[in-house]
Image (tube, rainbow, N blue to C red; front, side, top):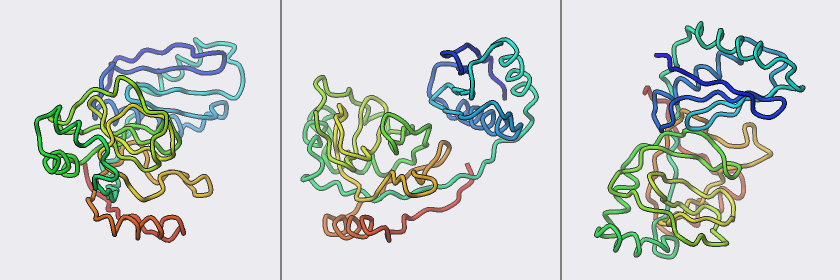
Amino acid sequence: MTFNLTYKPFGARAILVEWPSKIDVLILKDIIRFKNTIQENNIKSIVELKSAYNSLLIIYDTICRNFENEINLLKTIYNSHGLQYDSLSTLWKIPVCYDVCFGIDLEAVSVEKNLSKDEIIKRHFQAIYTVYFIGFLPGFLYLGGLDEVLHIPRKSTPRLKIEKGSVAIGGNQTGVYPIESPGGWNIIGNSPITFFNPKSNPPCFAKAGDKISFKPISLSDYHDIKTLSAAGVYQLESEVIRD
């Protein structure tokens, strides 16, 4: 499946390619396929490719003197890319403690949604999420697949400090704050693992197209896993699946 894409200069040495403006797994697969094809063409002047929900930013090593030529080349690559999207992906099983000491917004979400806290937790961890891209913070996974019943507005006034590992929902998304930071999502738990380590290769274990499931754990297990993760010896559960 191909899409009607738009191509436009983005600064002096980048081109932004855009797909239809919506969160869709078919668009994600097409972005990944196009990105992989560009990389396989080994264009020396391209130094970085950054993807988002419905776009791909192509960054060059020098100022583009002729955007029209570069765009025409990209269009040729896209229209001729016959590669099939690899239907194999990695499912990462992320431990999460939903204890009330971490889920500081569970009560508010419970009232807003007229659901018990247990029901909110159950709906959250029973879903399988898709990693669309990594951004906002290093190791912050933008995930699609949140149960529609849990869609809830972001906070009108963001917190200035969100604890590292906080698992939160906002709008139609869920995610985990990889480091301490400001944030406006509703916090329902915490994960004890490390999502970004600049000394690792790659620094973040997940990539666009991967899947995520959340595995509920006790407070005692949380502290055990956090100790192992801090020591760099915790082995995150994962399996290869077919989409």
